[in-house]
Each structure stands twice: as structure tokens, then as C-alpha cells.
Amino acid sequence: MSNAEGTRVVAQSDGAGRVDAEQIPDAERAPDTERPPGAERAPHTERAPAAETAGSGRSSDAERVVDAEKGGAEQVPERERTGAWKIPGAGDTGARTVPGAEKAEAGQVTEAEKTPGGTPKPAAPASADPASADPADPADLTAQTAPMDAVVATAPAARVVATAPVNPVGATAPVNPVVATAPVNLVDPAELELTRPRGLPGLFWKDLAQVDFGPRRFRLGPARERLETVSQSFLTGFNAVIAGETGRIDDIHEELRGFAYEGAGMACTTLDVLTITGGRRLRDLLSGQGMRYPHMIHMGAGWAYARLHMRPMWGIRSVHPLLRWLAFDGFGFHQGFFATDRTVGRQRSAGLMDRTRRAIFDQGLGRMLWFHECAGVDDVILRIAEFPPGRRADLWSGVGLAATYTGGASAAELERLSVAAAEDGFRAHLVQGSAFACASRLISGIVPEHTVAATPALCGVEVDEAGGWTDTALIALGHNAHSGDHYQVWRAGIRKAWARRNRDS
Image (cartoon, rainbow, N blue to C red; front, side, top):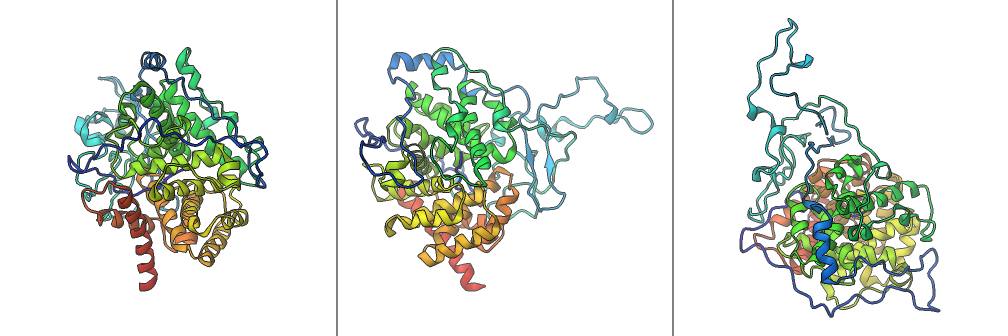
């Protein structure tokens, strides 16, 4: 679904840098998300439906999921999963790798391998083909044990193309591109055919129609089709994990793939909690197929906890020590989406949260407001104005993140949004959310046109520079950043980088 926040530096500390997620007793439950009878209804908000049960929670049922799901998130397809890694506006330097391309059998010589004279070309050494590397090779995975301030690429060299010399702070791609040899066939989420599993796993299956804005009484506008497609991508990623076809997420159009991995993060976390695996599926997704979408996956984990009426990150260990706080962002988005009357209309937030968790919760709620108001800039401004001043800063941060990562508004409209945030006194927070979105897009290797257009309107700089602010702020935290206070300092560091840039310009 919606949702990224990030940086191009996603290294974890070795030993001391890793911390187990906080254990929160089972007794702590999210408040009832249903709208009580007779409660007032805010205009254009939705009556909260009964929370959909993710599972019975009985150990006897949960244990059967392990055998029934056929591998879940750990299943890696035989075919090569790739996509198009091209940044719009960067010239013709983008490269594409070929998903599903059949490798020639040993001894066969294709037409492309012949010289003009008809003789076969000499075979290249096996090590020269980056796509032939073992996908399980630790060198191809996210740096899970590097120091926190290490600068690492988060995608294999064959899959990302640099459009400029490598930045010494937070490089996201190699300099040498890989030339595509065939077109890439990608589909929209509604067109991806998945097989619904039978038995207990089938109970988790999500109907794509549940994200229709009409029945939810969200505001309808020109961006409705786009935002509904984004929401369908989220559910498609969830269903892919449940069906044991996680590899097919990479068949989705590359611009929407991040939302699908957010849904995959929700599915993996749901299964991990119910089967008491300690987060095995989620960690495998983060270190394997979803390595370039860590921020979206952590936010998806927050959806699972909200659905299970639990607090993040109970029962999940050894995820990213700092990015795990994004689960509260996903938690806030879920509560706003499915309990709109309570969360938006009556402006209630989940209980049993300290100030830091509540701030991150409101950032996720701000992202949801972009969907709730159907990317209508004027409507978003009015909606934020209804909230108390103490909550608006984090709401503006979430709006900036969604507007940049998800899109749906023109550059002129976003400039008007920026002016309104400045008048409200929270321009820096809007910029901070937009910078998170830039970094998350850069780490995935896919920067769509709407992100390229939105960043100057909101941040006053191009995508690379805004994303670089998140790297600088994260490195400044040092090796052992892991707490909620560290996460808030990270956000504040991005705002300071923007303010410093404006002062010097």
C-alpha cells in the first residue's frame, strides 16, 4: 500500500547494534476500532467495519499454517526476478534485466552469440555474468552485520543502474549499467493471477474489492484510480505470500512493487506471530527477495499487529534495530484506513503508547489522509487543520511521504501544499517526510516521474539531494542507534539538513 520512509543506508550493527524487539505483554490490546453507536461522524469519513480476523490464534490452527502454506515468504522461484531500474529524466542510462529469460543450455549457440561471419563467439567467463551469481550468496544480500554508519549498496550490481558518479554518502547503484536483452513484461496487481490456497491458509486471503473508495466513503477525485491501484498492489503482495508465490511479486509493475512488498511484510508478520517463529519469514523476506524494500516491509509489519490487536513488535526478533519503529507508522495507517470515524473523525489514537510511538503513529495516519482525501491538496490541508496543533507536525510528515512516494497531485498543487505547511509552521516536517520517500525510492532503484516532479515542489531540491539528507542524518547517529528516541533524532537531523541548506543558499 502506501507507505515508505527511508534512507539509502540500511546496514545493521554487528552484535551490539542489534537489539531484540521490545516485548509487550499479550494483555496490551489495541482499543476497539469500531464506531460506538450514536457517535458523531466526520464528513467524508468511513464507518469503521468490524476488524477482520487474521486467524483464530489457537496454537493448533496456527501450527497447521506452517505445513499448509508451502514455504510462505521463504519460497524463491526458479526464474530470475528482476525489473526495470530506470530513473526518469536521467537520460538513456537506465538498464533492464530480463525476468524469466531462459538461459541457453550448455553447448547451444544462439543467433545473438554468433559473429557476422557465422562463427560462435567465445564464451565469457562464468564470473563475468552478474546475473548468474548465486542469489543466496551473502554478498548479494543487504548488509545485516555491517556497522550502522557503513555505506552499502542494497541491490545486486546487475539490477541497479547509476545515473551519476557514486555518492560517497549512501551510494545506491554501481556505475556500470547492464544492458537489457529483451523487453520486460510487467502487469498491474489486478492482472496477477494467484492460486488461492485451500484449508487454513485460504482464510487469510484478501479480496481486492475491499479497497474500493466508494463503500469506504473516502473522498473521490481524479486520483482515485491510481490510489485504488496502489491499494490493490498491497493486497496482491499479501496474497502472494499466503499462496506461497512470493516470487511473483516481481511481476508487478515496478512503480507499484513497493506497495506489494508492504503487503508481503504484513503477511509474513501475521504468519510469524501466529506460528510463533520469532519472525523467521519476515527476516527471510528482508534479507532475500525484499531486500530493496526494507522500509515498506517494516511498515507492512505494523499492519499485521493492528489486525491482530497487538502492539508492534511483540514476538518478532532481530529485525532492523531502527527501521522496526516504522511498524508504528503502518499501525497508524491501518487504524486510519479501517477505523476512520474513530481515528480521523473523532481524532483518537491507539492507547498504551508513549509519546514517541504516538508521533510515529501520527506519521502513518498522515500518510492515510493522502488516501482518505484522494490526493486532494486543499482537502488534505483542511483535514489537518482539524487536528490539535500538537499532532500536526507528524501528520504533515506523513502527508509529505505519501505525496512524494505515491503521487496523485501535480507539481503546482504540491507547491500549494508546501505553502500551507509553511503557514502552519511545519514546512520542515513536510520536507522530512518527502525526503524519506526519496530515499526509499532510491534504495529500490526505481524513481517514478511523480517522485521526480514532487521533490522540487516540496523540498526545493532534486531527489538525490533530498535522499542524501536521510543518509547524513542516519550516519550521524552512530553504530548503535535502535531506540525510539534515536528514530526521532534521525527525523530531526533531516529537518536540520534542509534548514541548513536553505540558510546557505
